[in-house]
Amino acid sequence: MPQKLTAAAVAKASARASRYEIADLGQPGLRLVVQPSGVKSWAYRYERPDGTRVKVTLGPATGAGALSLAEARVAANDAMRLRFDGSDPADQKRTARKAELARIETEEKEARRRDDTVPLILDRYYSDKVDAMKSASELKRLLSKELSPWAKRRVDDIGRVDAIKLIEAIKNRGAPVLANRTRAAARTFFGWCIDKALIEENPFERTKPVAVEEARDHVLSDAELRLLWIALDRCDWIWRAFYRLLILTGQRRDEVAGMAWAEIDLEASAPMWTLPAARSKNGREHVIPLPPPAVDILRSLPRIQVTITINDTERRVDSPLVLTTTGKTPISGFSRDKVRLDKLMKAIAHEEAVKRGDDPFEIGPWRIHDLRRTVASGMARLGVGVAVAEKVMNHVSGTFAGIVGVYQRHDFLAEKRHALNLWADHVASLTTARESNVVRLRMED
Image 1: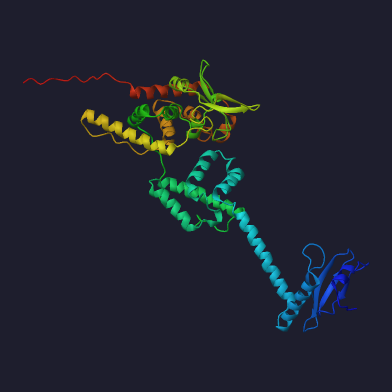
Image 2 (image 1 turned 30 degrees about the horizontal axis):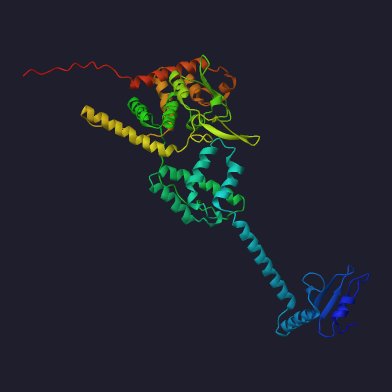
């Protein structure tokens, strides 16, 4: 039966075997709901014009956040006023509840998005997709450097305009090919972001390459190779060693740059470099016989030291890397140093032209990978067979493709050593001073 509730009556209402309600005579529609567990709450009941009976929960009557009797009556009175104004209290509460849930979800999403900055998401991308790639170090270096202008921005804040500005800026600093590379790598990265539900649109999807790239098959001439070798005398020791090892071995840029002391044996009667499968592009171990000039270069290199901690004690030890200045990471900054090297080559060509009294030798545009092609082409000119040259270059296509590659197990070690020694002799001959056979005649008066 309805009764005029008091604070004492609310407190004394005890639990029963089943749920029950007490109607409040002091406020029409207000109910005190008592559960079998003893939990009490306030509700407002009313009937819609179509006869549907509706209950709106107002809040707890006991415990944390409990509404007092007076507060419950005010809440019930507000609900009744809504009915008189033509609104439905239950619909209003449902709408308010949805709005509150949406607000909470938005705030939580925003809190999560604060951590979705480009560098942090790049780290996730590297771990998920890139680290297992053979080209991981190069790709990570490219993306981390070229996307650095967005270091404080979230991935979902990057738009198509931002993407266009980025690749145009790279192009305008004189690196159109790098702009294309960055565009392709970033497009893949943001595609991964879509797969991870971090963004909805790829900002690079409707962008275009900023330069037309032509297939490259440039081979440095002997004259260009000579200028390069001489120019290296004016470079820092690490770049001089790096480029000369590239020229003498014909191996890939990152394979030479990441060379480890444990991979080379300089004390053997026949020194060699064993490139492990984990660092080889084709995933196969590759043995490179080292010609004498390469051995001399490696023996002259300093051992860079790093600090390690063993049992809480710091010790200085030799870095495992051959070509390093930090002791922790291989040589890097290839593009920047290549620009300096090009300038040195042109300067030397100009100096020599001045001495001769004629025009400077024209040096064609080249890139680091062209050195590998130059070695292969040079060995062919010296009479090295295609099969041996491919073994030197660690190719698995061409002569050794398919079934031949499966059954051909000859390591060609002796042949490779002969080819590389022959090539090293040729390179040395390019810079060896030759006695002139020109006899100068003095004109008689």
